Length: 83
Length: 223
Image (cartoon, rainbow over all chains, first blue to last red; front, side, top):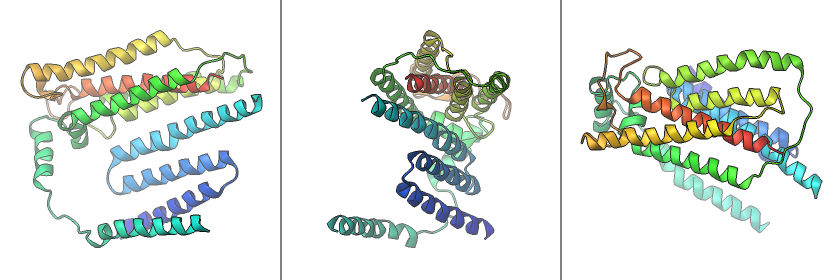
């Protein structure tokens, strides 16, 4: 029962984080909020009993994707400055 | 105004589509026939403790080959589209450099552990490969002017990809199926050297994913 409550809470937090990421004007903060969604999803996978998927989600979704988005944001900003 | 109405209509459509999933949901008391076959086959035929790994590597091996190919194409496209211009930049602090040169080896060790123990504990080639790539990310962050030897990265990537396909083809030649793990002796249940070719295949996938993602990170940072 308690795990169901935790999962529902995490799901609501994920939806809130998604809406916040859409509405943030600061792109850096939006990217980090999108990473938080993946982190919460990986906790849900762990509670539901699939550690393999949780590891993939935590390492790729919230780690590597965030870093690559940050690099891409940096690149876009630099090219705007050059023009 | 019209935009908002269309968005609301689309959301209502999505809710109508997904609502039957919630109402028709029921907990399964028993595994169905396919799952029972996979679970008993993983333990009895393949000697693998981790059922997920045996499904990914052997029973659905062709799908995994497809995933690895997609990753390879993504890496090739990023390397092709983003040209590297070299600029000198200010290095980071000495504290970060010293700490990261100590940590990098440990992180790589963790990644290697995860992909060699894929058939025993959760995790596998993809997760281990990503962890190895994060070790190289730490190197990039600590020393901005560091250069990676692209020849070694490419050799590791191509050889692991080629060996992966060769192992699959050996299964075809022995007529037990493409990417079947039973091409070498299965060993003792629960040991590191067990489950046939699964540790070998997962190690190759781990090396391939690690070198590809390192390549992506190295290309993306180039200004």
